[in-house]
Image (cartoon, rainbow, N blue to C red; front, side, top):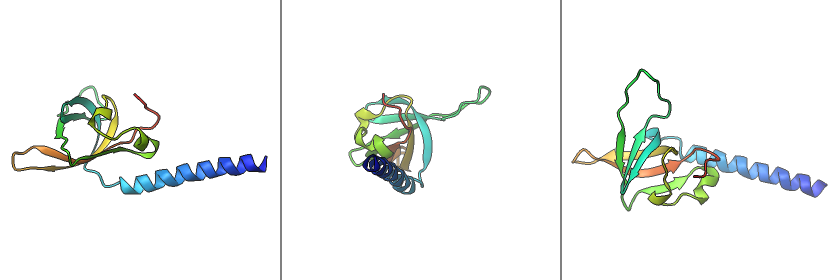
Length: 117
């Protein structure tokens, strides 16, 4: 019984530490949005909360070979490239604008929990 309690406590501590480290690593993002569409090498992002009377502009971000794509917490095991990004996932995005006024993603992190599409 003591062994079972120790194992459960260890698992809880590992999960809490994992989330704390990821929270610190991924806290200074440029945009926190929801994926509206994935088109080839472009991700279209929309706002997370939509108010009925408001109008919102969609944000298009290009994904290159240098873009780092991952997940937050256990999602890191399931999200590695653009094919793993799905409609409706909540993401944190770091990006820069190039000379052609295109948004180029540096890093995309899926952070919604327990949402395995």
